Length: 217
Image (cartoon, rainbow, N blue to C red):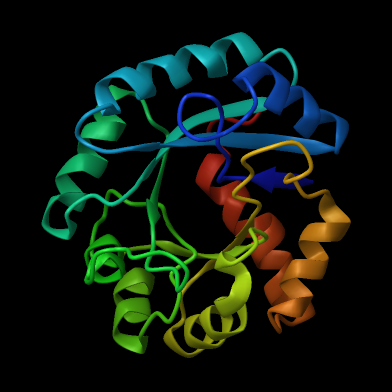
């Protein structure tokens, strides 16, 4: 049962319409997919309602979850904006973590990990043990990613999450055709990060399912 909780469409920097993204996910055997386009204070009120509508229109195929990825949001405002996103209808709030390939503001990982309104901290780069402990305490899942560049620190993220007791999810961060991962590729990414069989089962199935089970058909 493939569940991907981090993807993008034409509502931010993706190439596909929501309907095409969903159809391609369905063909790969996905049970559910979250559309989590990039937002900040300038577009959150436009993007979230659009994705809520997209989820309703695409729901004939598979379970479609409206969400957001808070991106380059000032760290002190992450919690408030995550709360705003959920008030607008976002079911999944992802925060663009401190990946090593982009200049993300310092303390983004920390503030996201401390927020009870955040669900996933995406590609958190060289996340610290302290940050991962906050994530564990607030039930914020850390992402093992299939996206080029961001995936460079997957092994580190897995190791720190294991020490801190933080949950993991495996996502594609899809932006275009070919970015989505079927079950086999997602498992390969998880294995490459050094996850055990039990950790893979939890990251690919248990944790993502728990996040969206209230929406599953």
